[in-house]
Image (tube, rainbow, N blue to C red; front, side, top):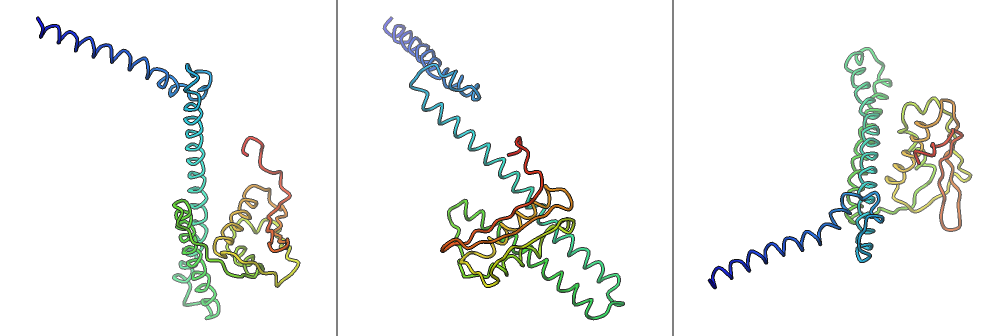
Length: 232
């Protein structure tokens, strides 16, 4: 009898524990199933801070995923341009190199070398972003001429840039600033290529720099229609 009573107590305890656990977990489960209206579905006031944390974490993850997809698409595009150029120039040299003048061959060799170096720089920038996310990025800050930085960026623009009017506004040819030149070149290139991509042919794109005290401000502007409100 005693053994049977103990067994019944254990069974009742297990059932009671399951019921209580289900009641405690149900609000959290309901929150997880209705994240878009999480505040309205919080049954207990004590769970509101948790609801806010869950909602913020989800939005952060969604934003990071969106940024990752956009970054992958941009990198794919950036890699395609120099690869196409290298492939085209190599094909010309293979098919017609023997009939070319030496200066023309050297010009194509130099173009292939420049594009290969740019690819190497792109890969290094991708690694830099990874190091930045991991908190391991070390900036290589050196005094640089803004004119040289502009020239390097504009030398690797998307081919579609030729259908636009590109203007550089550099009041002082000897203007210098301390920066990581490779990273700044990539930033300028991305901004100008975005302007090329999202403005009609014939648009005016201006790359400008102004000294502001101990700093310089670099800007990329265009006269296109701008980014649609729903895409901002």
